[in-house]
Amino acid sequence: MYRENTLDGVPDDSVSPTQRTLSDARTLRALSHPVRLALLEALLSGPLTATQAGELIGESPTTCSFHLRQLARYNFVEETGGGRGRSRPWRLTHTGWNAPAQPDNPEFTRAAQALDQVLLDRHVARIRRFVDAAPTYPAEWQAAATGHTSILHLTAAEAAEVAGAYRKIADQFRKRWAARNDNPEQRPDGTLPVEVLIGVYPVDAPPGHPR
Image (cartoon, rainbow, N blue to C red; front, side, top):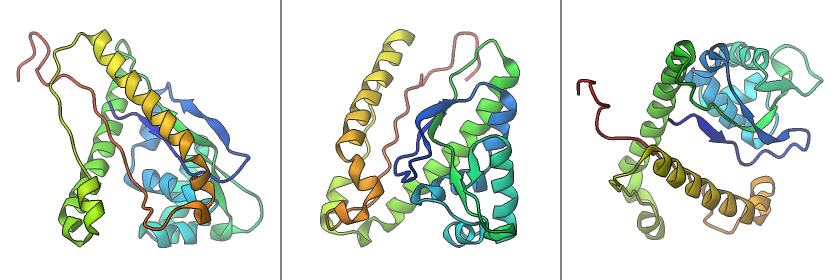
């Protein structure tokens, strides 16, 4: 469900500007680890060594070095060249990834569920962290941050239409402020990284499935 990730802010021109489509279970399982997802986010700021990445995500250089090698094995990151051991810089290979559902592939579906669980835990943790710290933000941020829930009675095709409409809006805003990703000096005072999360999913169990 949450298996679509656009990694805005990649400053390296050698990184592919397109999303990578993931279609095999092994690759999904390789991605389904909190440290690996954290490393991908850390690399948004540009190439990092295992030591530098560890300082950003609160893990040891040894741990980061292991997980970077695993990510490289599945083509999520690559070495930039230069350096040795944990001083080798790494960079992203793509600006995003997606993993369309494969309803007729049980192995892929199980791997997708496992990845969804890890992603959902990360999203909820970030939302909870903001809620806990909300009173410490400036008043304008307390007013701007929001959540919205709607219950719509839709067909599967209509639900896909809603998700597609969101993607178009997100792309418009992404292009509008794209220059800020690579150029911090272009960010107005008070700019913060903001996560926008959408979920489009049924709230009732499917027919014949126990609640």
